[in-house]
Length: 412
Image (tube, rainbow, N blue to C red; front, top):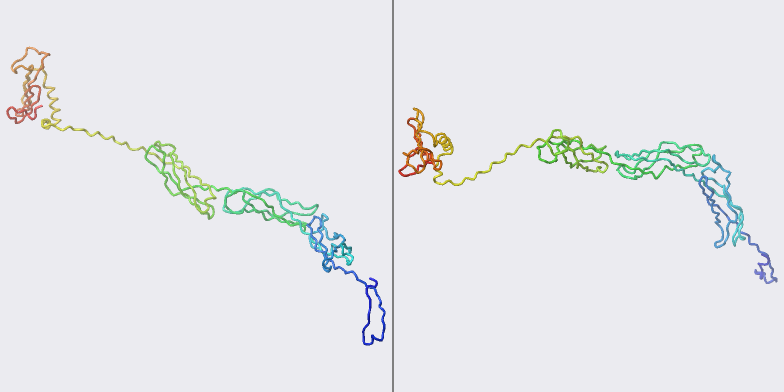
């Protein structure tokens, strides 16, 4: 600036001895030199560079000033097989020139700045692996299939090595269960530019293991017209590893209800319980056989006879066996047309007199009259000194001590 500074007075002990005419002079305001820096820029291996931001640490607050040049990146550093700047950290490979921009840029000077740069490794994801379903086996191991591959950039030398292994999230039965893969590694000339990511998103199923019930037997039975079979023995299962599983329930049915030997018995209804029961499917016992034997016959009870009360005369009659014999004897001894038969010593003797009803016993009809009822009077002596049995007027009279005009108690 010209004439911006003026001296208008003097002072001091001898100032009075002097006169002074005001004088003017020039003034210079120098630009403030900006101390610039560039923040570390970043990129991923094989991707476009992202440059850092230029910062001025000593600019006057409120001034509008910015680096006017474009940050340039020196790519002459170490490169990979495919020509990309290798992953790593680099110092001073990005720079900005001394141009400035902004309303207050004229108040500053800037000599330019250099900064660091970082190239991050590129993540390579493994693909091509599959996870297979399995039957429950108490562990989380998963069987993998397919072919693991990675896609490196350009002509980079990369080899996928190692053995892939998988594990389920839990050992328990389930569908669409997450499988985590591990065990693969990268090798090769350009391996430093890559970060390996094991394959993700794999799922598979664990299905139930079969668990057979053993120790059960079918019991023989007597025919009861049903197919029901009773089971014996003690039901048991042998779970895998240290799993806790218990078998219970169960019932049996014969193939049919008929009598037979070695009849098949089908079993159903056994269930599983215990901490690990949900990982198993129960297999019912098979191959059981038993016999159905014939039921013993049941006698039909005889009906209880109803006995009518005996009259006083009926109760005095001879026992039934005696009356039966008498009836047979009477039939043989009596005939309306027969003659009197002489007795034989030592044997029973009898006399027989046949007459028509209503005639005297001494009258003998000249011929039988069919229209009249015949009466037979017979006296029979049993043995020489035995009692006498009389058949009087068609009735039988056994020996007895009768009173006069009293009907014999044994007369029928």
